Image (cartoon, rainbow, N blue to C red; front, side):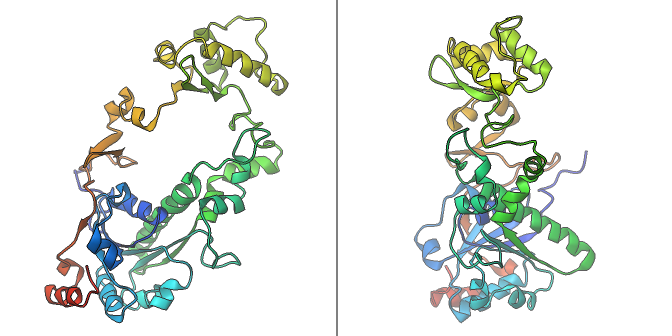
Length: 376
């Protein structure tokens, strides 16, 4: 067992420029594993009321006017003592402010400069606005999501903002930090949500081109197959079925009382999937979700209750693993993945950082900037 530590990123200093979902999420992933993350927000936002966002847990925050020469100079002082900058502006904005990669590498050549955008730093769409739904639309991912015969259905903003965006940016930061150990130099990361969401679907791009994947909602894993779908129970709740392999399917039928039924439609024949789905649906509606939970408990039938987010935190498995924690009255997912042998991270809401001397800004400099309204 390795020696217990505060996390593998302990000692890594990150300046996170304030932004929406993907940037703070990347910063959270780094802070959860030991990085010292300082969130740089607008002066007014910090002075009035610091954010209390779960994604800001374990961070410190300051307000800095980056539209003023004094604010930019102060930011560069912080950069001189930083390892990573997370920047979330449209292409060209950071350069106009004087805090682009070239500006900051002139101050600190070891700096890892992570840029998070939807479209990327170049290409015809780069200067335009967009949101998660637009990025996964252009990547081809959205076309794959939804029921057969229905319109494409976005999975809220998980795929673009968080998985294809923030998580990819955090991954890029780690790659650049690892490379820096060999080269001594930092690198610029161009993390685009359109690229990241496409990468997540690499397997399916191949499947479509090889003819192994059909139209939306007609395939094995996209609710086309009855053995991989959700079903309503007698109390209006749902269970999720993932009995793909034959042995798991056999266990499902046994526990549902359908094994040996000569009239059961053949699950290996897609033409019979509608009839099989209807048969399963009819049986599932005969019992409540709790009753089905008891029936399938401990089995290999691959059937799970579809829990609300409130219920998930109290499920016995999640409780046993400590998968959720409560901080400041807010229930939230615990850090993931787990690195055994590390101490629990600080998950408290972001707090104002009053003393910036460790970041290279003396008390006298800070006081002067506060008097000028540049720093909060």
